[in-house]
Amino acid sequence: MKQRLTLQCVIAGSENSRPLLDLLTTRFPYQDRESWRAAIGAGLVQVNGQSACHDQPLRAGDNLTYHAVNHREPPVATDVEIILESRDLLLVGKPAGTPVSRTGLIIHNTLVNILRRRYEQDIHLLHRLDRETSGVLLCARSKNSCRAHQKNLKSIITGKYYLAVVRGQIDLPAIEVDQPLATRDDSPVRCRMWSAAHGQPSRTIFRTIAVTANQTLLLAELLTGRKHQIRAHLAHLGHPLIGDKIYDHGGKYYLKRLTEELSEADYRELGARNHTLHAWAVRLQLGGRPSELRFSEIFSADMERRLEDFPNWRAKAEKMLPS
View: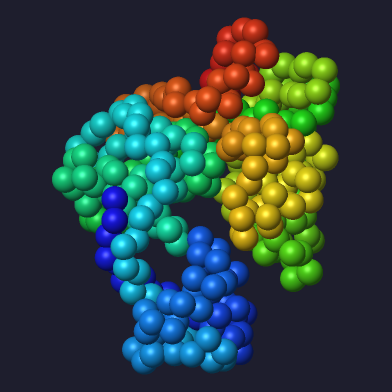
């Protein structure tokens, strides 16, 4: 689908004084440097409503506008799993690879917009998942419903449980990781989270479901909800998710993807096209009803293949869920 779109953003303090072309190339890598140079030359990029030049230094607070002509989105899965519907809420399963909200290149087929078209309602997310993470998400069916439920979300979702397939063997029955998380200025992968004493408090419980010669299936319970929490805690343990472009192989495949497509050989080394993390279950407390567990079965093809390596994983995992 080709579209004409106007995209806008505000320059952050950390981006102050960066030349326009450098910022566009690194922050929006879905186009290469020469394509951004051509867009600037054609007057499609504006700073504070005025045409810009490629070496123009930006200032914190500047408004950057890009008029995309013949915009074509890459294909993503749109087969959203509907788990539970109520008057105010939707519990859905998100496919791996589908962003929950707008990214630099994907605008039409975000989870939110897919649901808005399907229900013809003003759907809003009550929490988020990374683009490559599949599984369960709770949404509100109007802005007013979102506002009302957002402040009570911890009493609505009283438990979140993920399936994670990681590199190596973890033979301990359970590990609780209590490690604050923060970004690091010296990291080439700017979005990566690291264990840091000054970071935000972050706690995850990992329970071992099953182990093979070179991988482990874990049930991860979130006790806090930080950016990349499960992925960062697993990397801290030395057992990154299979397929994790940021936290495995030193982030080299994340950095490569900023400038070019990954090859089939790259994906073979990663072990999966999307990282093997699935938001499997939530415990819901709705109104005066008893709490209930709800599950998502919208596994990626890679996740399904990995789960086949662990016979009877479901029965084992269900016994580990807190009652």
